[in-house]
Length: 460
Image 1 (cartoon, rainbow, N blue to C red):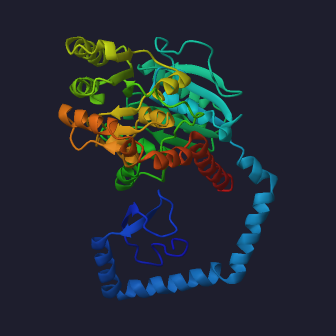
Image 2: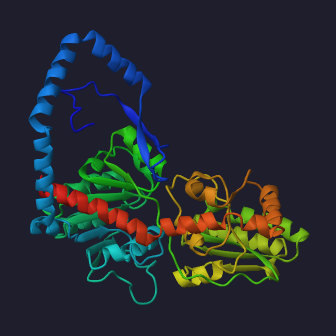
Image 3: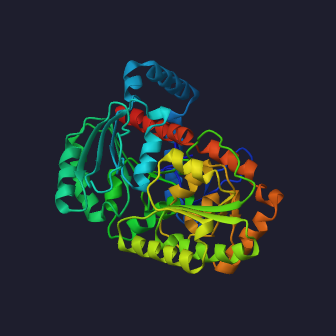
């Protein structure tokens, strides 16, 4: 409708995005729900402002007569076909991506970036990666960089690093500049400085993925977002927040899921409860330990597997001390396996696949999504989750705790451990989710959007 309904030809009604209920809609589809108060105002204007309404009608008729006859439409279709076949259009869609992100480091966004950009859709398309320069959290072993990528590490948590990043952004020659953003990396002040360099490089498309929308919007002026042609987010809630603030266009693409070959079933002698991710207070690992201890007294065959990476931060050290103290005081060390290291994908999936149930008892979080839960999805084991918003999009594919306390968690573990039929009831739905949102699939969604914007701007 916006092809011919413009501020000059129509009374435009405000709206907000909601889930589409159309019978042909995809699960993530949305439509625009008219705002009732705005609709009421526009109806009144249309009735009371007769001269303006008449002027709009005449302008609309003139617009249709000038540009929307069948001959006009046919001509535009013909031109579109010509452009698709034209070599310049094909070259405009050949992406050369410069990425700003943590990379090959002990960091969830670094893991996400690596999984995404190693998907076939981006093969050979990564030109330069401008990564964080810290060296104390670099991964051991050979770097697994994308094919043909140049890796630089100009930025860290200091003003000089941000200045150097801005200078390096100026010299980029890819046609797509893509930020993997988190407010813990770049403040709004940092971003205001960095975007001033955008006009001094070769990029045609400026894209950004926001991994924590709420903190970004609460950290002062976020008007630097207008410097980007497209904003990617992982959840519908984040899309609505940005839309309400007037930032956009926004594309919602769910967090990717790693797909690995099927692994053997867990050993039948025990029932193992696992958890995985970085060790931070909101993950509630000590709470899980206490709940497991209660359940294990009732069912001695229960086992606990904690694969939580301890970070060199005080809040992570404290969580590790709590976990160790509880395991010792509750006398469950002989039935508990703990690994505080940063594990590779194959190692993680091998160990998680040996669990009968994977538990994420997260508390409140401002993060948009959690990569840990999605890696666990790839292990193909049943999930037990809290009602935390960061887990909202995977809750329908697992079991959700009614309350977040030791008694509820212990009872849930015992019920699921005692019923094979109940434990596996969500397996088929979970497997469909993994295939639908594999990194290979979401990479194609990103590629499609970036190529479309690149082509449009090539002829702007």
